[in-house]
Image (cartoon, rainbow, N blue to C red; front, side, top):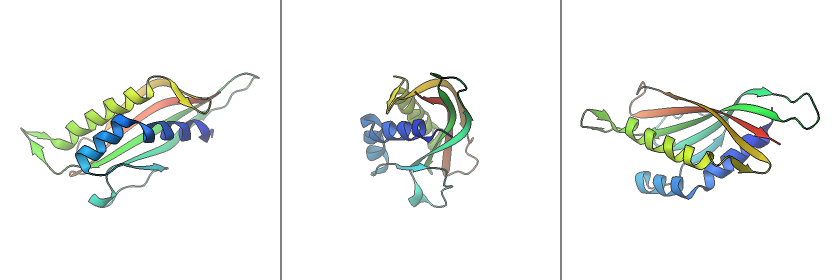
Length: 142
């Protein structure tokens, strides 16, 4: 596993001013950023963003790059329902856009890049009032 690209993605997302402002305005505190996955068990565990490796591809030739499919799992506590819509679904959509705005420049720092191929999986409010969103994407270390 090439952990450097995952750590670079976490560092970039952790420092993103738009995400910092969103979490502070909405939840009154910054998100916790965890390398690995921790299933939240109570409202105090939120908001959190977990970064986990999923699948690695190792380069076989000189000059090649190692690619890593990673999961970025966002967890929030949103007990409300507004106009027949779970607030958690709405807030996760906002967070998803903020994360993609942060990553899509491609450069993560530390010789790591975002390669895209994103897939987004929503928990469909299965654990309301706890809501999670998983972003699966490709990263690489050069």
